Length: 232
Image (cartoon, rainbow, N blue to C red; front, side):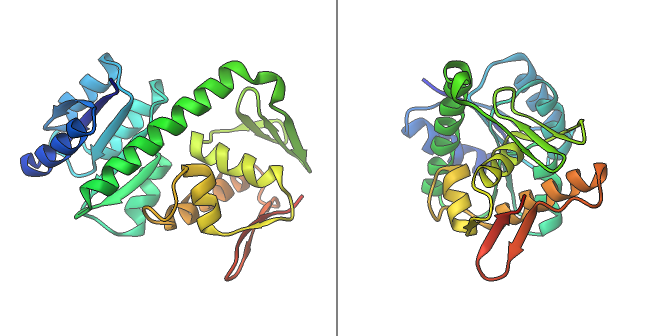
């Protein structure tokens, strides 16, 4: 049975999330503030964490950052805030996805299932298919598919899992234009569920991290009205 940790201070929302997840076969633990939630996340093993941003004690962004320092499990942010700044900050701290209140419980369950399934496939691939992973190099950029590490001019980039996946996928098919919907389906593994603006946030984060090392590098190009393309 897959284990989920819900860190949410709103008792009604927490109960709703717990009930739907338990009805779909998950074992659910809960925490009502960031401090106890962070302690639970760091001391126990979970398959996914649902994390509210606005929390008493330690806020959700700090909880996300601290979890990501030591654990690689999926983190799904939940918040009433819709501003892009919140998304950029949360995803920058290592969260995998973002869902805005109010949300459909069925959508929440679908996202949880998708993220856990994808994480398991990725883990299995890393453990069992190293021989198939390849290294991609393009004008100072190096992506090591085996170790899942990215380098610009020999300087390693601090990419989250989703950022690496997105960059590696685009670099694997240079000069091919992918729509946001295509990328959402390929990287997040579900169709038309959630906000494709997540793609924009991740692309911008990747660009920023590359330019921090070399401002002249611009690998991911926006094709207006179409999507994104990797140019060697």
